[in-house]
Length: 378
Ligand SMILES: *Cc1c(COP(=O)(O)O)cnc(C)c1O
Image (cartoon, protein in one colour):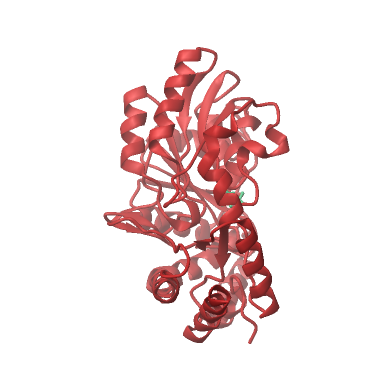
């Protein structure tokens, strides 16, 4: 069978019966928007993450935008975002007219560098042009960011924290789950994320009652006590019922075995590879949900050669990310010094993500590691 980068077909085959039944039930009830599937999912997600409120919405990007709207983030505000992440994390800041301030990441965890974060906050305050408002730590590749230190910094400078857990669902630090850090957190149910649906979907997590109420209103046209009484300008951002029904089956699989399975695969990979390439570093007390298993090579030449070699052997691999945020054309109006992004610039040239999903067999892992071992020994 073909080795997949992320195998959604095998997962579907395993759960086909239950997923088909759940979809059919939605079709029979003709309840396509809202409905009990969405409520059940929100309750289960909030319980799993360990927060008071889970509010589902259209996707992970909208989840973050809704929070930015509720917090009234606007022109003149500075929002601190890691330089090494998916475009969305910075996009939602500029979308509000605010200014994203990109921060370099840690060379081992690939997550926002707290020391550079604090000095950037000081710089913004010193320059006095922008008002520091929010930090958006990203749980990159499934590994939670340095959340306790980030919270300390946020408290010191009176900033809000939005945890972007689009890739982080299932991860934890000392048992505290991703999605429960900061003032609010978001996740994405895009099919390839740790918990994915069969289309677009997203969710917001928070313990803040007032924020939860505002977001519940914003996501349905700023509704008041009903949908035809509109008390603020909002958007239309709902998770549809069929997706919720699918997620209810997949969440059970995720909790029962998928999170454990990807962690076993991480160990298998690392056992073979840790002596020959840089393998993922998981700090003590941290659990990753391995949205990606990402290795680091010596330089761009070696990374690109390995990717070609893997491709020739029928093994898919991906480069997350080829371009740092500060080099994206959409942000070309912002002025930076390249010296501020030493680590991110280097990562973009040296990282390579290998096939990673709960249905990867030991044989497949061996196939991948053998190609890499042969590559390194020639
Ligand atoms: C996928 C992703 C998002 C956006 O999620 P969508 O559901 O695709 O909108 C945001 N941030 C990060 C880090 C992501 O990986």
